[in-house]
Length: 346
Ligand code: NAD
Ligand code: ZN
Ligand code: ZN
Image 1: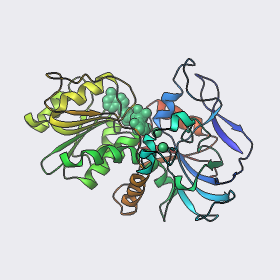
Image 2: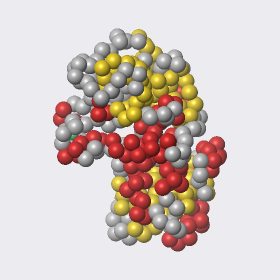
Image 3: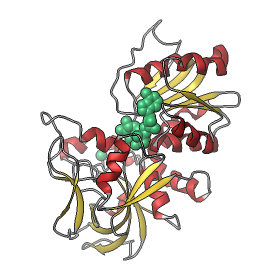
Image 4: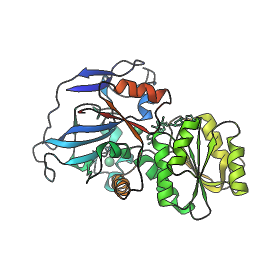
């Protein structure tokens, strides 16, 4: 089968032919209908050789939906042809966090060498994808594969972040979204669907801000040196009650802290890795800062339910598997508005 692989540190991903996978006992083979392109893959492909955590070559793609193509021995509850979404952050399935459905925070994944598809084991940018356990699959139940696939990460990750801050986002509150790309433009819709907060969106280009307004942002602000002042002009002295930074670099983290009000949540979702100094006098009183990872299995079910209810709709552009390197190039260059989706069998 064809697969998009990251093969050489520092080089773009390549379309290659690899052996067709076959499901072993307990496994499920999916025929991939759609695979989402996440900015985290670009970060991975920019990491240096020293300390690179995954084996190469690596088939990319940690957002996937497909139809069941074959069942390994002993698998029940699924049938060939079932349309499913893949829950990506696999865990051991039995530790205290996995028992809560929070496999994204599995206590034993590192020790047991368990990786998400596309981030350490073969991912969804291939004609077929091997799933280790049927519990990682959630029925699509009528959702369109292209519209649904980004929900497995670009939907689930902001959903998890926003859900934690819901108590702070009552009437009269303000939520700030920094970076309105794949994750951010879904975050705006989730905030509008789940809260009565005023949503202020920040990005570096007018194109991105236009999409932000289209999907429900009340106000948009250019993310530059004057951003804190511009946001504070809108909120007044109370500031924002929740700030979601989908970039995480030094200037955005500074903006995030600068627009936060007392008792606000500042959530650093972008993996830019810039530190945010927290301390008395450094941040407004009682600000909570967190850096979450992905979301739980039940939260994925909730996000898909929201999509079925018409509350979230991802803006997508589609590519064949052969054109997948182009999709990564365009995302790298800031040219994708919404989410790029690869159709490996399209
Ligand atoms: P994306 O490229 O689609 O979106 C990023 C957006 O940020 C773009 O619209 C870009 O114009 C904007 N941006 C860049 N610099 C900016 C700045 N200085 N100020 C304001 N906006 C700026 O990327 P994505 O796929 O949505 O991913 C967003 C981030 O989230 C990435 O860092 C990604 O690695 C990370 N991520 C984290 C998790 C997690 O679990 N924590 C999960 C998925 C993705
Ligand atoms: Zn991702
Ligand atoms: Zn576990």
